[in-house]
Length: 493
Image (cartoon, rainbow, N blue to C red; front, side, top):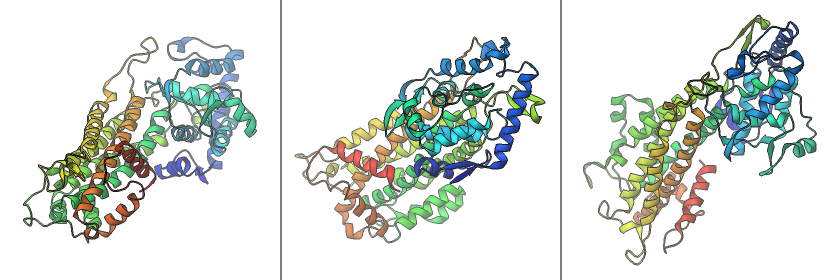
């Protein structure tokens, strides 16, 4: 079980909750802050002070005062009217992450929600009741209003949830699990939806998948080095220490470790003086992607522990300030940066694939075909990789450079961070498929060179993967092979 404080949630803990199903509890000290913040809201309502989001309309309607008797109805109307998501649903794992992150933000004690609302989110998480949340419809400022409204619907017994992978009306599942819906009170609807948790949840899942892909790209490219009898000298520590980037140094070190007992790599001048950049510059290119991953991790962990709704309540209600912490620009930039970094892993992988299959660039059978001419072998797998890489280039266009005013120009600059996080997810899936293709081709090339001469670590991978896809001895529907290897990569290291 993971204890949440609102201040210390890590990506590793997010992984445990989302991928391993760890349960959560809220620290007693944090619940005390929640209660104090709630008492401040109730005092504001009782004293009939006019405070945005508590007893006013929203956005352009912020100058409309709401009667005390209508405050609860205001919150209900807010959730229903803002649930405007469209398109495909976020994956269930992202929905779980979204609930976790919204819960962690609320328990910081700046949002003014009741303890019962916090307890309800904990109950939903621990009983694995995950809202169905459409992916499209957020501008990424004023928070992820549409996606988070779909999350909030489940708390009031409306909307839909996943039920063993099937979309189902939330009330059915809530009744079965013995979970009572709640009636939202002053400030609570706004507190649930005014935040960056959709883009950050998608971003956290993106990071966890991207980190795995980055590690996998190393042993896959190591097998390609063996298939092409690459020059190991390019990973000599002196080269990388001379430049000084720690990520580059570490990748070169890991590549040397993976290939340390290989008989298929060569030395400088033994067969050629230099390799092509896609082999020789693995530490430099992959290392630059790792620099981005480190940056993205830092931003995600800050945002995962941030108070991002509006207004925020301080000093036991004496200070209530309308600000803009809901603006997703930091995560928008991080996701756009992540898109470029992962797209480059696919770019350089596709160039290695080309070197594996092009008979003008190696001494292997053309297109790794068992019968060149009669059988096409891996020819069209390279086409597929090239297509995916090209698609990544369009998806990598930064979402954050765009902005469209909304709410009658009150909200005149937005981040589009949720679009960035969604496109990053697409790039990650494409890149995994490109790496799957390189993996298939490098396995085949290494077999031509002699499995017995492979490094022990790459040979271990080959033995595992040959249980997933057989050697290419006959043309077959390679789409199946790519899918099976990609699925294996998704669940293995």
